[in-house]
Image (cartoon, rainbow, N blue to C red; front, top):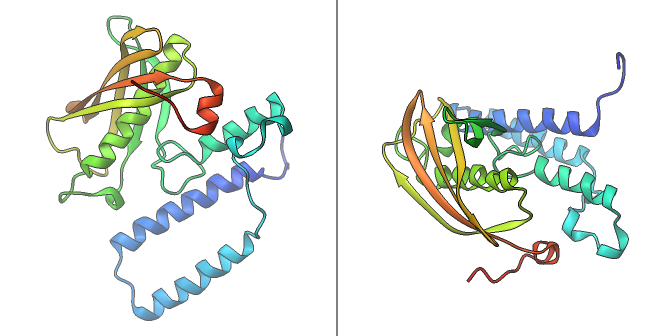
Amino acid sequence: MAGSEPSARDEGIRLADEVRSLLVDLHALDPSAAALGEAVDRVAAARDSLGDAARLRWHEVPVDEIDDDAEARLRVEYRDHSLFRGERSPLAPPMAISTSEDDAGTPIVVGEARIDRGHEGPPGRIHGGYVAGLFDDVLSGTLGLVGGGPAFTARLQIRYRKPTPIDVDLRFEAWVERHSGRRLIAKARCLAEGEVTAEAEALFVTVTRDQERHQGTDAT
């Protein structure tokens, strides 16, 4: 609606974008001590302006104090702050997730991201551990392709075919390889400028809602 005030989510995304840019600047620029000191004061003032009201995550609210609508809203907030796709997390690229089909008509999960020098390992290349994390996030999306519930990663295997460059548009594609009972095996690949730089395979084990909330399961 024209003239409406921006929401807390909108402003949170804007703030995350600015902090993300600040993190890149800290890597790319060589400011003087005076400039850094001024920046410290401004960042400290910005932190003070946020207040001290705590944001509860969905699993921190007692079950008997939360209804379905409230939990759904808090789960959205939780995803907004997630490590790899969270638009309100300055630590996330953030990675955009969607679903599509490959040339054979197989449903796939697509992750698109551009990784900056803050996640650099070898010169000009993304740290391999960060590539693994991106794979884990995209692969977890395949649970939705089979209507799966909550699950934990039981195994993640990465094959690095060539270094994955920073500051290049990346495309991750993931699909279900096998699904039986509580177990789902999915595979994925990472493409940079059309070339496959890495491949991955993951085993996910579904859990109950109670296990998800309490972060514990037996994956054997």
